[in-house]
Amino acid sequence: MISEKMKPFVKNNSAIRIMFEEGNRLRQQYGPENVFDFSLGNPSVPAPDSVRQAIIDLVNETEPTVIHGYMNNAGFEDVRQTIAESLNRRFGTTFAAKNLIMTVGAASGLNITLKAILNPGEEVIVFAPYFLEYGAYVRNYDGVLVEVTPDTSTFQPNLAEFAEKITPKTRAVIVNTPHNPTGVVYSEETIKKLAAILEEKQKEFGTVIYLISDEPYRELAYDGVFVPYLTKYYANTIVGYSYSKSLSLPGERIGYVVIPDEADGADELIQATTIANRVSGAVNAPSLMQKVIARCVDEKTDVAAYDKNRQALYNGLKELGFECIKPEGAFYLFVKSPVPDEKEFVNAGKKYNILMVPGSSFACPGYMRLAYCVAYETIVNALPQFRKLAEEYHLL
Image 1 (cartoon, rainbow, N blue to C red):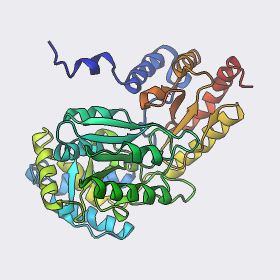
Image 2: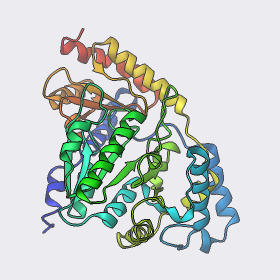
Image 3: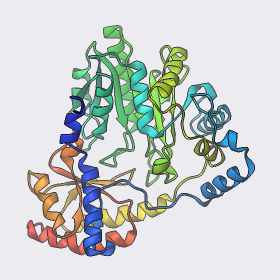
């Protein structure tokens, strides 16, 4: 017998993962070149050559008991200091090693942060559409997820509704920018207004509300768009980061959490989050990958390749009559369905071997997410199939 908590997960498995498995099945049946899988945010751009070289050098140069051994639950101090100094150079911050905790990707970072701050029944606010796993992470610690409905004209946060939904039980707010699934970057004006609302509500209720910034797509921004670093706008900000997208290392599960000195109870919060890293079962982030990151801290993935894909897919779909805002970051298009039930449209796409994820998987029905972190040829070859789909729904 499985636990009652797990039964909903088994019944409602991730639509993204289900679509990914469907893609594997179709590739075996029709051949990879004839399947157009836009379901999973799995980078197609390889990691920089320096990452591979760092792995080789570290394995050859470093004592195995060090490179594969335990360390402080927060991670190697020299690695954390190296990352802190990189952040300080880039964003004008004043972090040190003690402000960082190395994590098993951004997901683990979110979990240990929530474990450190949440009491049962306390609320965490998210802005729809959002990565649906946030709800699972919050419920892991008996918290309550509160959704703010989307502004589908801009997909910037609906701040009026946000202010109304903050209560004395609000413990945290999660934001994700550049954004999955829309590709929107929250403007500096938006961040300043959001921070002002939080400051006002903290004073009104006499509580501490943490702003958790989930930033796996920070480096994937286009057209020179400015991506604000949120600790500079609101003292009680916690940043979660992952190298899954910026260095194309999703399977390596390496990232970090930043807790600034300015955050309320920072020293105790850092200690609690570090202990949460251990008691959650992760113990520490992968040792070899920590050392690799220290050597490649200022490396970037090839954003130009994603930009080329972005332009090709966005322009191609617009020409076919589809509605979509142009993404400023990440590697997703959030396309409006031509019919109210987007799941019907997603299923229709399968007839042409097009795999999309329904917007209801992000608490925003009526839309579909397309991950354009695929080979450029996949986009080029998919557009004739999208044309057939557009014709079926009388978009042309």
